[in-house]
Image (tube, rainbow, N blue to C red; front, top):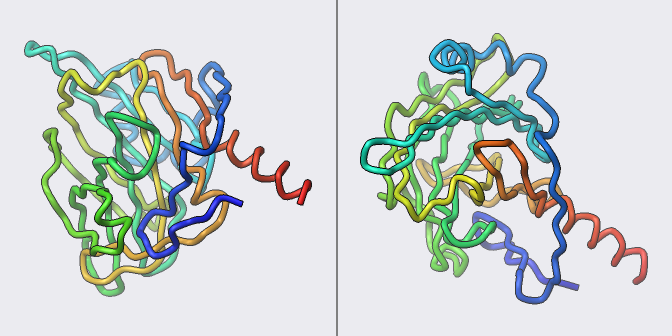
Length: 233
């Protein structure tokens, strides 16, 4: 059985030993419920009629986005990610990987909340191989600009969410964007600690076409393979 690195902030599944066949589908489950009441989502809709929104495949997360090309042939991407993180301590992460749909190599935006903190903190982080080896995950610069970052623990709608504007260089393919998300319940200052080892935590990644909303559900297919394998053992 595939082994997992439980001492890292993100538990990884090796791509080298699995033959993954991913399925593609038209825009998946649309956002619903309280997520549509989030002020940042309403503002995104008011600013442009091209905003798309979907329920992600795990961790009760929902995700909205819109984008346009800049005069320098870069991509300005607005993102909004939220989940029902009702614990007083925890963290929410979202990021993109220019190479593969996996955690190592991801450039992440991570929001952290702790008790008695009026405004949760939000910073950028590089998920490197050193983190996999046990080094601390601390805020750091990443290879694209992040602006207008907002994090809100909205008790009225019951969502902990992050909004940000990203300016992406050409190496990030908007028709095949590797994006990941994650949730955890333990922090040490600005350092998110290890998340749970549930299937939802392990499978929180996909390849997304920003224009059409089509996606390849990498995580869901892995989950199916693990279930089949467990029945054979």
